Image (cartoon, rainbow, N blue to C red):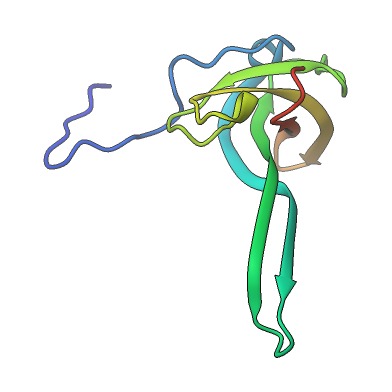
Length: 132
């Protein structure tokens, strides 16, 4: 199906450059992903009146969640490394913004129903100072 776009070009769908080292794409029909980047460590100093006067943020942490429909029963293993190309520069491998996410799978959950396909959610985490 050909798409017809008019107006401003925007990012749409899932990147066609999705790759991984954990075999995720061969076991799932990828449906969606989300990326959340925060600081793993934050600290503040307040004055005598309770107003924050200093804030320090360290160690960027990027979490990736992938959702898909199972093609097979074989799934990646928690602890596996995963590389994933995202649409916008919101991942921070080694502390620099990037479209390339590299992390460690920390959770896998499954959802089944008698009226739907079996889906799997894979969660991975990456810390600025750790190379998986």
